Image (cartoon, rainbow, N blue to C red; front, side, top):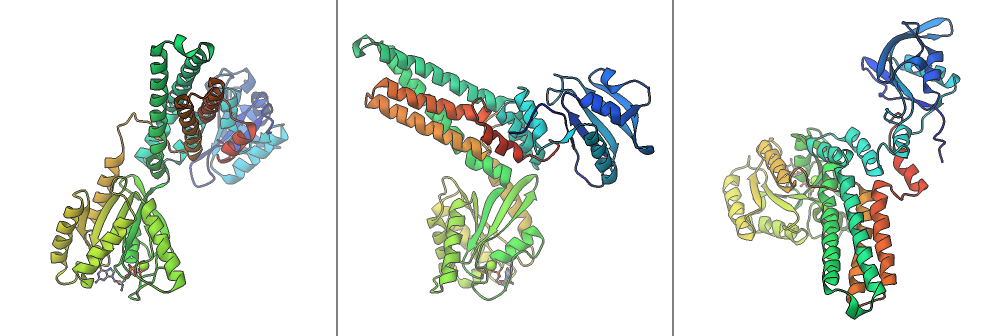
Amino acid sequence: MTDLSDTICAPATVPGTGAISIVRVSGPDALHIADSVVTLGSGKKISDSKGYSLHRGTVSDGYDFLDDVLVSVFRAPHSYTGEDGVEISCHASSYIVQRLLQLLIAQGARMAEPGEFTRRAFTAGKLDLAEAEAVADLIASENAAAHRIAVHQLRGGYSDEMRQMRQRLVEIASLMELELDFSEEEVEFADRVELRRLITELSAHIGRLTASFRLGNAIRNGVPVTIAGAVNSGKSTLLNALLGEDRAIVSDIAGTTRDTVEDCLNIGGTLFRFIDTAGIRETGEEIERQGINRSFSKISGADIVLCVVDPGTGPQEMKDSVRTVLAHCSLQEQKLVILVNKTDLEGAEGMVRFMRSFAAEIDPAIVTLGISAKYGKGLDQLRETLLKLQESRIPAAQTTLVSNARHYEALLHAGEALGRLQDALERRIPTDLAAQDIREASWWIGSVTGEITPDDILSTIFERFCIGK
Ligand SMILES: Nc1nc2c(ncn2[C@@H]2O[C@H](COP(=O)(O)OP(=O)(O)OP(=O)(O)O)[C@@H](O)[C@H]2O)c(=O)[nH]1
Ligand SMILES: [Mg+2]
């Protein structure tokens, strides 16, 4: 395990063309080490300065001047890590930053491991694990929804919910004790009803959270939008038009796209992950068949499916295309948009109306649009539709969404343990066995906030952070 008792340093800003860079130092010797590297203009010592104070100073490299800097001083426990620390703002030259780090290391600091500042904050009890992970999510957030999830998690709303769930389990455990201590007749009926109610409620709560992962994950990693349909309908042309680059090969040869092609695009602040797929048709060719199977699994895995149809192929083919796509998705969980492409060609507008009424018969929630992928017609309307469809899936502001795969997995395990508990209760299995399920559920929920997370798991989590965070 990483030694958390020494003094660490790292750049907190990315190397690049900004105006200033910040080098962070944290640990018991942070102020003294900073003193031996920075000379304050006031003649005072950093180690004599108050917390939350700002000082101007210079850094010299041997006898040579290196840079004018500003030093922010933090005193334990009032800092991000809970330790003494400084943040040195220097000019954003990668040379200055490197020399400054070398000077700090020569004075006894060590380069921080990725995520070590946040790990120290966690160890000091400044953040729990879910909050620490939210820091990484906040840094990575590129749109309003991802930002909102990270902020909710960082502000502790998420962790409170986990703690309340564990509290519920304690209540359940104490009611179970009653069952254990007394024979059946002596147990108050009210207690048994209460016990069942608590377990059912908690199960439902966990079920809601795990179900939210699909959306939470989509917000974090991009809403999966699969472009599907028959060969030559213009799927790859559409992908390229949306991305504004020649990402996928386009040709008039049917069956051009064999494998899936994916790319992300931010539309109006929401990240979408577009997936172009192999055109669906009957084929005896093995590779193409494998590609088409992939198309089917990408249709099932999408949040939004764009079914592209070519009016030139006639109404029957278009309807078949939509039916094939529908066979692989569920309108309860997914949104379907029928795109009648090639509306630059004659007679296409009539086909748009035809497909719209066909779709309305299947489900009024299906949206039908006419576009021309090749000439960029109707794409604004498509982008608007995508945004609207995604927004309709996002619940009210305060609802907790699980966006972290580790949390999702832990909650699944907790839900399974509760399921076993419910089962045990029905089948009147001895309560001491059922108590094991409670402990297990509690362990998994506790692992989300890090109340009981083994060291190696902690290491893997923090390694995913960047250095300096
Ligand atoms: N006129 C017209 N032609 C289009 C339009 N969109 C695509 N095409 C043409 O249709 C042909 C097939 O386009 P692709 O984008 O390769 O079609 P695909 O659906 O990806 O085809 P596969 O990968 O084979 O399944 C190409 O010749 C495109 O130029 C459009 O809006 N109007
Ligand atoms: Mg293609």
